[in-house]
Length: 119
Image (tube, rainbow, N blue to C red; front, top):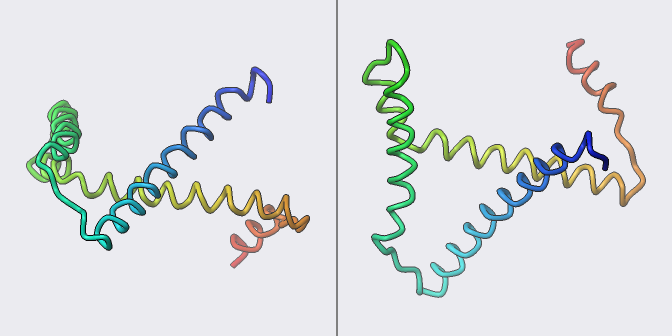
């Protein structure tokens, strides 16, 4: 780690935090549901409503937009699905990296890429 890679390491740390928060939220929701103590409070809809308002505001700035663009911005589900996928990709990459360090087995990823593109 040096001054040239500090920003990259910061992004890695933020990615780990984002994946951990999503995993923790899912675990807590499942646990509370199993214990029967899960309660939905209206106040928890304020943050998603703020995200939706921001997405719609940004969509209104897009030139030549139509109603489908605004509807897609207001749904919030596509952004949330992508965020879960990104957290999964990020976690898988870190698990693979740490597993190769612990086991001593290295994968030649360039060879795997070459083989994938040759097909």
